[in-house]
Structure formats: C-alpha cells, structure tokens
Image 1 (cartoon, helix red, strand yellow):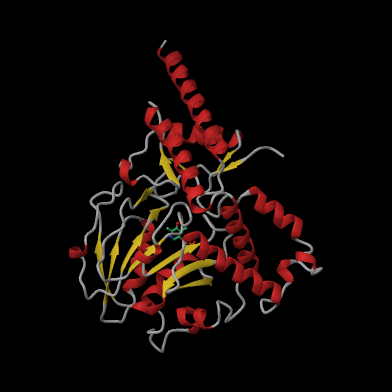
Image 2 (spheres, protein in one colour; image 1 turned 90 degrees about the vertical axis):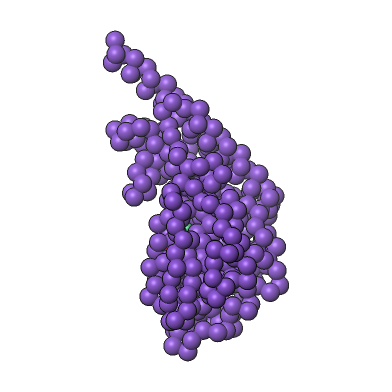
Length: 365
Ligand SMILES: *Cc1c(COP(=O)(O)O)cnc(C)c1O
C-alpha cells in the first residue's frame, strides 16, 4: 500500500492502531460472535462501550462531577440549533463572538430563536481578548468557536464572561490541548476531526444548564432527554461511539491530552516555521492566534497553488486543498497525524520551492 498522509479537515485521519483494532474485531466483538455493528444498543457489551467512552473522556479532560457528558447526532451543526432552543428564550439575548464561517452559521440558527448580539474582531486573522465588561450580565450565554477550522485561528485566551456561561464549539481541536472545563457552561464537538468517525457529537454540559427547556422543544433536541436516558433515548450511532472509545484509549496510551499537546506543538511548529522561512508560502494569521490544528497557506498565485496541490497529491499528501471560501491550501494536523507526516510535507514544500525558484531562473535567462 502506498504511504498516504491525510491532511483532511474532516472527516479526518484516524490513528492507524485504532483502524487495525477495528479490523481485527470487526467480525467478532470480544467473543460475542457478532460485529459491534450488529449489537443492540440495549445490550450489556454496548452499555460497556458507551460507559467506557464517557469515563475515558472524563478522565482525559478532567471533567468535573457537575457536568454531564452526552453523545448525540446531527453534528456540530445541530448544536447550533439545540443550544438556543434549550438555553435562549424568545425575548432573551445571547452573545456570539464571530471569528469565522462556523460562528456565522451558529449565529444564523440562534437568530431564529432569540435575540443575538454579535462581537466581530476587526480582521479574521486575529482574535482579541474579551473582558466581562464587554458582555451584558443578563445575556443567557456567550458563544465562541474556539478553533476556527477554515480560517486557521484559535483563541489564545478564552473570554472572561463573568457569570454568563461560556459555550464553545471545540469541534476541530477538542483533546488537542489542555483545557479547564470548569470555565465553560457547555463544550461541544462533532467527532470527525479529533475524536473519531462522523456520526456522533459530544457535549459536555454543566448540570445547572439542563432542565429549563421550553415544553415545545422536540425530545431529541432537548439535552434533558439525553441526560435522563444516558444518551440512549433512541438508537445512538453505535459504531461511531465504539470507534470514538478506541480513539480515546489511543489518546490515553499516548500520554493523554498533555502528550497530544506536546506532539501538536511540535507538528505545528514544524509547518509554521517552514512557511515563515519560505519565500513562496504564506500564512497571514497573527502569531498568538495561530491554530495548532488547521494551517491555511498560499503559494502566491492560483496557478502555483494548483500546481502545488497536484504535485502534492501525486506524492501522497491528500486533501491539502483549502476551503472553497478561502482558496489556497490547508493542512489539518489533528491528533492522529503523525510527526513524520508533517516532516514529509515540510520536505516536500522545501523541494517544491527550490524547483519553483530554479524554473523562474530559467525563465529569466
Ligand atoms: C466541522 C465543523 C463544524 C460542522 O460540523 P458538522 O459535524 O458537519 O455539523 C462546526 N464547527 C466547527 C468548528 C467545525 O470545525
């Protein structure tokens, strides 16, 4: 099999030991004689899987006792709707810090439910610090996209929101670095970036934020339903939860979140310093807000970008094309991307640049 490094923004690379384990267990899950895909979600082996996934996530993120961990469907996008439906009345206000495309989509859904006040940084390449005095004490919550998958930015410092609950869409960097869960009212993430395959969404919600949802809210959109039924009110995405649990085991075996963070710093450093030292490649994000996970860059012109992408694909570097709204390139360096993958990409970029310079030189002569 050809060596391929997958830089997709999501669904994204999974740790190979996890995929190998899935393969080994696929036809006979722990001696049951059945595939994990065939097990009832009400069965003892599946209960063990979902309990195990929750326990591991609690351990890895040091989630305090006063938080629920929920497994849902609908992706982060459904959370854009669930959050206001559960936490925002028609005449109440929520505040959204708009740092990119995903924040805008979250605002759009909240706007349908209540009043939204937005805070938009001057440029999409930097995120300022936000202090409690900038928010109204009567707001129901403040929402942020803590890592901006498309723009390649992240909060360097989380907003101080005083007593107003802070809600974070951590889809593209959960488990990539240490966080203090107690600073948040609600954290949510679609799994397909750093947690596992698509199909499952994780929410970590402070207990006091559950239970005040209006009567008209559909059962499956009410956090309380998931709390009361241990995320098993209806059939959950059982296979995705199983793989998610294996990913969490892999994170634990590899030094936990601290181990991930150290490795992610090293990978990001490798690529950013390659870009910064290059005369060809550029990344315009302010240094303090550079994402460790999603690194957009360009090579000066659409023509060179296209040539780079073609040659990179030939060489086994997959999904480096930037988001259609931004263009250029984007390398996503999630937890499961090995350092060797980034090192190989950096070597490839250096060679590509060398050849570009050479060709330019010929053209001049
Ligand atoms: C990918 C992504 C989403 C959308 O996730 P879906 O699971 O497709 O709904 C939302 N927010 C962020 C920050 C993302 O990276």
